[in-house]
Image (cartoon, rainbow, N blue to C red; front, top):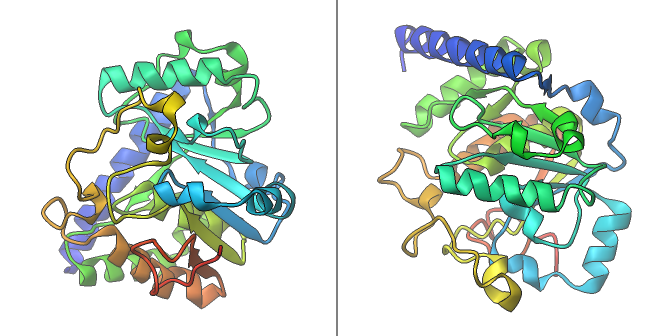
Length: 279
């Protein structure tokens, strides 16, 4: 990656950040702000709740600890799970049908999610039909803006992270970082929030099965991922697979500030590179 590549990437991301801001203002939605999010923080540990099958391995005692001792961030279709997180990060799409389904879930669970910070990402790619949502849900939405890091090669990703750190981009702007998958953005959310420990629970990455696949009441809900290889682990779709992205983010972004990164269970494809937090 050369200086010309750096400048081209910065210009592209600047245009995208401005586009998200325009779309947010046109929709009349509030922006995500770290100051507001930090006011809800009640722990030094953030447990990111992904949708992998290992979530079903959490015991009653684990759920009690999650509710009592840790802050939690649910991702995407976490709404299908009965546990209500403190923060919820989601995106619309990738198809119109999937977006309508998400809107239905948001409406059906509006009361339960009333006190959750609803972090709405990737608005420039797919947008909710706000007219289909309860007013209380619309008012609770916070539009997240971010910087997409290049993931064509590991050296390019490392160079971009070093550049972002050297100019203090996240501190100066409140933007979060994204690379390859929502869990990476969730990890940078945890770092910018000031958590000392970030746990990636239900981030299995070794197949395309989800916690709802083992629930007869949710058997109607099909996965959007075909095949057996999780798309973020497929090297044919991007140069750097998400497990490698996470290791680079851990080493270059989290560890220098003393943040520890864990996987949820030893069954995750991230173990033993990341220690298991549960069980």
